[in-house]
Amino acid sequence: MDIATLVGLVVAGSLVMAAIFMGGSVSWFISPPSAMIVVGGTIGATLVSYPLGEVLGVFKVVMKVFLHKSQSIDAIIENMVEFGKLARKEGILSFESKLKDIEDPFFAKGVSLAIDGMESNAIKDVLSTEIAYVEERHSLGAEIFTTMAGYAPAVGMMGTIIGLVQMLMQMSDPSSIGAPMAVALLTTFYGTVIANLLCIPVAAKLKIRSKQEILLKELVLEGIMSIQAGDNHRLIEQKLKAFLPQKNEVAGKE
Image 1 (cartoon, rainbow, N blue to C red):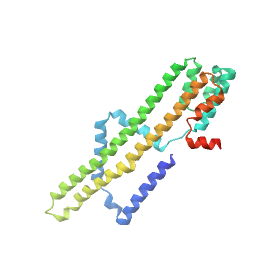
Image 2: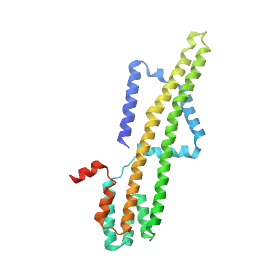
Image 3: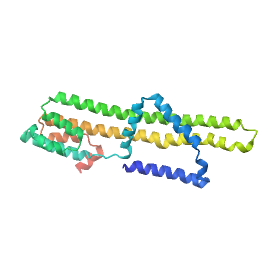
Image 4: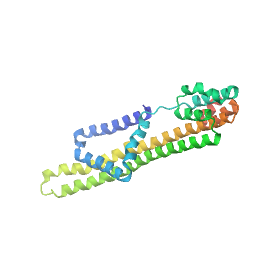
């Protein structure tokens, strides 16, 4: 579980709920008709905008927001350096015995291609294509949530108009105005909450996760190219350290 995501959801949800409790009963903010309008309208509009498969697939991508397991760049660089040493001593074919110990599928794929004797350009093309596909898939997931963030408040406003129409049609009976008025206000509230506390943050986190994953894959690609080119392990290390954040480089020098 990503701690920042969990803390953010708990803090935001807790403060909103605290404000509701301080102002009155929480039951005032529960309206099934409002929820149906906002949730149903947002999902429906999203399905109109994107193919069903893409919308269903985005839920697999969004798991990266909550169940993200970060990889250590330092550990990957260390592994690359060791493979570089091994390649110069025993040759690339010696990687075969190490292949089963590689946890990263992308890393393992690159090593496997090198063992099979593919040329550097061919390996680069294969791995670059996979990186581009992953980037496109993650980009689409963030785009869908950004789109939902735009639809939710708009659908909420539509629900507000529905509630106001119902209220105005019953002006002759003041006792029946309360329920339509609640629908009018709560749909806007639900739409705003869904957009600003869920969809927009998820889209932003997906973009960050995508950048992090692409960076790691590009690092692996650069390492494999250097290993196959027969570079010295110290040169490999210096090349890959260029992928480290600036603060990590400064800390390493100290």
